[in-house]
Image (cartoon, rainbow over all chains, first blue to last red; front, side, top):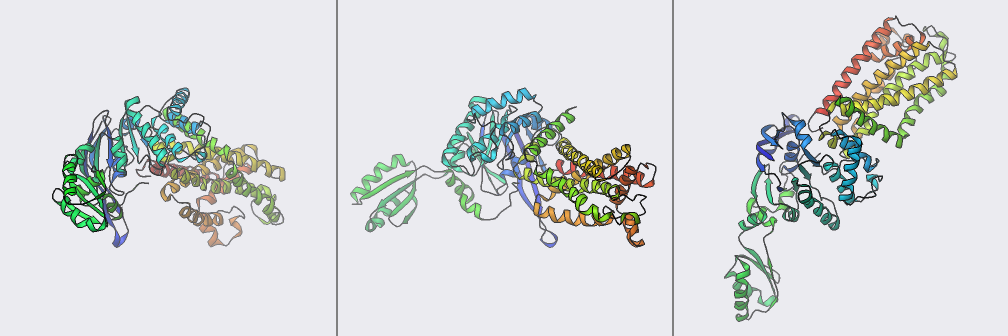
Length: 328
Length: 253
């Protein structure tokens, strides 16, 4: 459904002496199969949105090629636009217009007849739980409703491939979970291929069959969440003990774990196949006279994966200015 | 004919939003009406000394105000576009297969229709206050105004998408408007001025356009002013549309 080879996007920033070339996307190769839900993950400024804008024909690649829905993004941009839906992170409707009007006009720009656009729009309003909001202005909608309206806009012409740019940014947890259900429905109900960018690890984890990780303009990983997590060495085992037993607990944990750290009364380390190792650890601790206040076993998160792949945590990667993201 | 159809979709959407919030249209018409009511009387005792062949203040003033309305009103058309851009509307339209020119032309159609309504109000009011003119000439004058207004609206839309900021756009418009207002003889004929000022104003396309509309209102169609004014109006319209389409087509706009 999507094939990209060597995509590059450079921007020029600064003037005169400060002029320099920024490579926001620096040779991206990616493939997405029909029916796949792919999560495109990376810190802010990694090149997610820029890549997305090239794939959706909004930005002409500086170099490289991309085929989307069977068409070349440069030479056949109109056919690409006809085949894809795009839900941008900034919104798509005017705050002072009726939601239904915006949706119908949008459908008509895709060449749909008015009655057809109205029928399809009302169907989508129902599916996305916006019934009764046809004559509501976006400025009077909640964040979650507005985002679902953006999804309706992106789906009005029945695209076979849907791009979602940071779909749940800024939503409260409930609206977020609700939108996740709808995104899952894109494939299960509509059979669409979905390509979504996010910088939330749990979002990629929950929605995507496969995760692409981009950092500083290049793809650093592409695999299922489980396989990516398997690259992280082991599960995190966290023990909590009384202060005078910390050293002994660390010693015992150290016999089976790597990278043991203590933090106050907490002792943690990475253990291969923690599920099998923990019973032995418990016996060991007991015979050493360590009394546990609590024990926790944490499966690796995508944050751990990012750390393993790049040597930085996602949060650190966001605070270090690398290449600037042109999201606008 | 998809282009016409797409332009129409954009146009009807814009008109619907305008009708829902007509404040801008009213503000646009208020300015020339105030000139007419508050500045017109000042011209009355002076107008006989103008060599424009008319001793009627309103016959002199209305054509100038008409062009001013076309320019000023249209120059501000782009401000609405910045709001739309900020809310993601432009981007949403640009991911559809619609022609990029249609996205601009639909908006220009709204600006020109709005200008036509304002022009008719202005001419009717002027007529009520004593303006006299040739009917066909008034019609031609309004057409020239609409062409110029379309050009200015296209430039304004292009400027809006280029700057993407009201704060940057407002001073630019001010800087452009001042010399146009002063050198095009809208309020007083340039012939009152010293030679150097008149020569300077000869380089101002809008002076020719104002003179063209004035001559046209008077029913003298064969003057060089009408010819040059019409040529300038068409040239400006072509340039404005070209610039506007280029910005809508440009990636990353």
